[in-house]
Image (cartoon, rainbow, N blue to C red; front, side):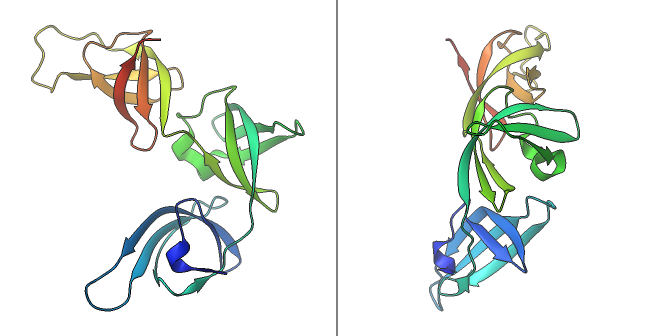
Length: 187
């Protein structure tokens, strides 16, 4: 058991016998009354999302988790396929459980994965990732009415709005949480 005030993003909790991972957390300290925590929890197995509010002194049941490095192999449109680096054991995860990561994870890359009783709870993806532009619309000279941006598709299939000077084959840095362009990468 931990105090609700100690819940952080990524904390695993057991609610009604089901594991949930905190994906958003807001600590509120009003002028009157006691402080409280608003959390958004997601079940990795079902995709169910809960929004809970706890007084910061309430006890909540946390669970002991284990972090392991896993290599992302591929997805077949229905499942992710990962391989544990230590045992070379392959695991399949329904795409619906982690659909936000479908176009962010790159084949062959290693990610830190959180497990509870052999069940994958979370995949830790870097906040910023470099992608190669696979497809880019041609920019029309003088077209600044649209805010001087265009859509591109990365090698993983992620669609991103970028400035018009970005061309096919160039590398761009993308924020994986917001899926927004940050900058062009020249390396």
